[in-house]
Image 1 (tube, rainbow, N blue to C red):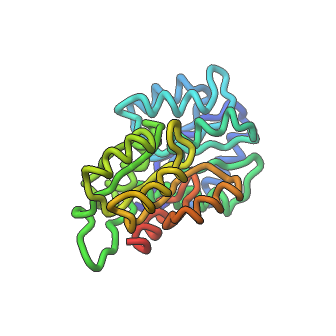
Image 2 (tube, rainbow, N blue to C red; image 1 turned 135 degrees about the vertical axis):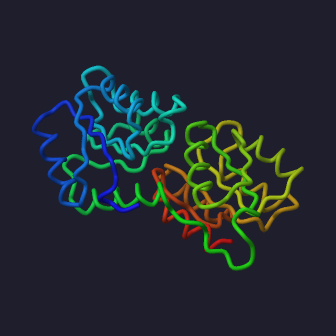
Length: 260
């Protein structure tokens, strides 16, 4: 897929903001844009037309962007459609649920053209990342454990991995559950979140490295955690690589190719 083929729906109550965003989209090569003002209009359109990308503001007339993406993730028809938020909102209460829902990008208002172009490229890579370039074994043979307390986040990560050709996927809803699976199964890769109840990502990594039969298994952390001291502790615990939420599919692909 190429950028100019990305069918997009823009959910934006402001006519002025709509014109600005559509102008930027045309500059990066996207002309197929449908505009709606409310979340309800967006959901009705998405259900019938299944666009390649949904771009939304945070504050709509009938719901928030957080509400919209959560409704999409809870609907089997819309659950895998890439979602991008454009907002001046910076409050953790609004943004963290968006990150956990598996969004393509969070763009600030105002944003720069390069930021939008990077987000659109991430969308294209998410939709068609290409299979992993593996020298020693095929991607369908890789056994991966995905650990995240958010069901929507697990689904998003699984979709990205499946698009890369990885078929053997196991889920765990927290670190304790992951350890039970690790004791009874062999995995080629563990993909984990940081902030989880009962046992967080750092504790999981420390246990795997120091008290399991799979001490050398590669571990990729995909997390919205930005505290430098906490991330330093995760590095010290023995994580193989760390990737931000929201993440770029091509970045995750390169990291997996490298650590495997």
